[in-house]
Length: 297
Image (cartoon, rainbow, N blue to C red; front, top):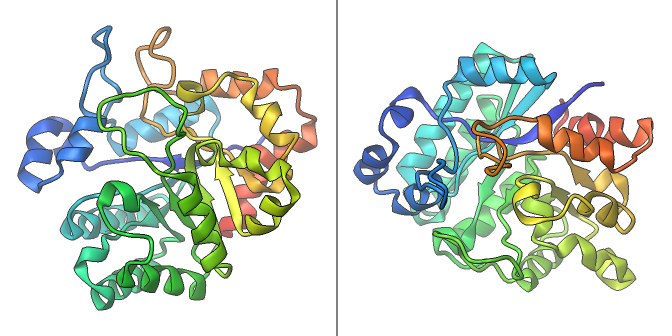
């Protein structure tokens, strides 16, 4: 069965050699808090595999394609740097990798539009993972609205980081009020949004028919699901949300099972999908078909 992981992060080798020093030099302290810390047991929260390791891990797990997501960087220069790196990766491995671009509105509307057009011309197929709350700009920021308008014009879905308001505290946690995303979907019906991490629980609001209509242009990815939710979340959400609105993603190279695994991978989360008792058709759509259709893969 084909598998597309629509939420993967990847960094150039210079990041992996000394992530803390790299983040300090680039002015990216929030990323450092989230991605270079260790959990209470001493395990790193994630690893920094190079591209060849990513491809080997995908082969071992039977993952056909990975969609590389940008990060919600604090500096526009870091966004542009990652976009160029992702363009190189997708050119080198077009059969295995696709990628989203990232931006920071502090660069200004003109620069943001130029960056998105350049990334689109380089073959990148979406925008994100963005986080206005983490990147410290408002949802009605002029440059952010310009980015959304261009993303709609270019048919580039927009992935946004969402934190579940009921989740526990962790270093680097930023509140992302769910009402902000409801308003964003309402204000920009032409944009196809992908809300990461089950939309921080927003997906469950679609049990209300009025909310379902408001969220018609919203999809949800499953990234980092085992860290925030019981395995029952798969069936719970899909009993509420139409199957085509759920996009499989993991947040690789985040370690999703720190109590039982020492390295990132797909085994555990794919086992959760199996245990959810989906039909073959449901699994086909969830694990690949929805992402392929939405991203034109």
